[in-house]
Length: 397
Image (cartoon, helix red, strand yellow):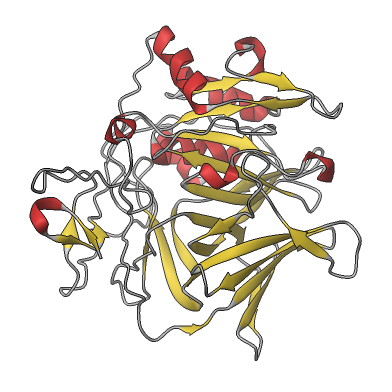
């Protein structure tokens, strides 16, 4: 167990959700109605929650000790815990600054390997268009010297920026996405290549590919010079426990298929207790290769892999734009320590982190460390094979 406040064992970061209003400008489209979050947040009522939110946060298991993300001194030392990983951090001052959300590409394939994904505390992978997916990487507990290649934003990033009160760095976006970002209450914290310039968003051309990259310190300095409020919001809400929950189904790996051209696997490595990622290579016939971080040369891994079933709605057909409705609550499957768990994800308010429960309402504890959230359509198929490995076939209605 990690040690924390006043010599108490911290195994869970207490769930507290901050109720706060947000502003999303409504999008006009004949194909879908405005999403519940867009409709709700447009009325500027700070006391309203997302429809169907639970009336209260579930009580944790009585056998689980509660703690705080920032501990008080213990003896002659002070431990500061990252509320997004459940682990102590080397530099407690870093937790006083907002998280940074950076849009990192997966395609085209010659953009791999990416820089800085292994430094992220949380990564969300989501569908973009044409069977492809992209990453939204969240940095909080430590700095990243280089992150990229950076690409364009999607509607789901608006929800993630609100959820974590983050600074947001991206390349550009469709005009309808830009309209919502530029009119949002966090607009002063959202930065794209133009008109920002370099630094903090610079071009790197190691092999003639002209990648857009950044680093977390440059982003912080840029906003500090502008006088933007960089004080960290309340990020408590995620539960962590070093002890593996009981009654898990086998979960030695999971293959996620967004399309015939886009699939990847997470394989559990008992020696490290982590899931390691392999990505399709374009060679066909299910061929995959380890996905690495260009900064460190190490393989991309995660302590937790969580598949979230989330409604996906078609917003526009040409170009294809999908509205990923990551609000309210839904079902999912979490993987840790070689096991799989049926869970529910809950995001009851526009601001405040997403948290997980077991189906009975008790908090689901993540393993302390990094988490990759895989967002798949609510009608996607998930199955378990006899060898203990899972398969997810992405689908949207």
